[in-house]
Image (cartoon, rainbow, N blue to C red; front, side, top):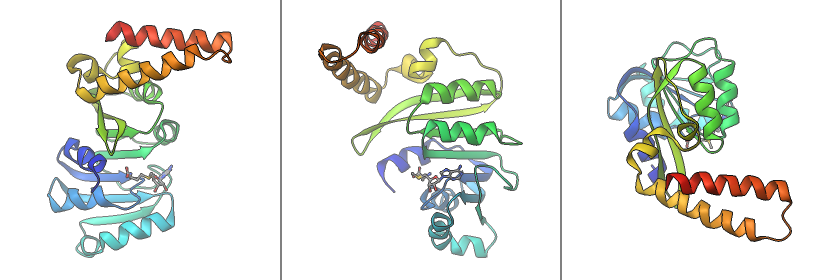
Length: 213
Ligand SMILES: C[S@@+](CC[C@H](N)C(=O)[O-])C[C@H]1O[C@@H](n2cnc3c(N)ncnc32)[C@H](O)[C@@H]1O
């Protein structure tokens, strides 16, 4: 397990049936079974080759009925589960999985590679509330990890952009990410070749970051 996967695994609550959507290697599914955090695991991937990797890793659990593998686009045709993880995909892909799902699980953990604000907005519209939403650093990169449960919620513009737990608790990784972003923004803004409207957008983003720092 990489540090990123370990952080994700540690954030997952216990459940009856866990769905690892876009499981690829299947490492998280394996840890959920080994640790007994999940009684049963549904592991799925849109790619047959990726699913075969996970199937090889989880074959003993498949034999004894604690794991079932599916080639599936998002939640399509999966049996019921109470907790799902969608990690390591772009935000737009996560949104498309959520938008076309017939049923959504009680609990959901997502780790979008990009577009976290849009993911937060869509998930709240779909009837989730945010339990935890923070930035962590692993393998020298920053990631957002969002834990949700069904319920009502409301996000301020700042919470949507930066993540609620980040604003409340200011974890080190979040502050470091902001500091890296501020430096990059200042250098883009100073670039003479940049267009005026692009510069204005960057200046506005810098102001928003400075406001919360
Ligand atoms: C970068 S891997 C991430 C694997 C693992 N979840 C992780 O966090 O390390 C993304 C995986 O998602 C799968 N994937 C992409 N779009 C998907 C979709 N709509 N439904 C299911 N799997 C999908 C890809 O085939 C790939 O195996």
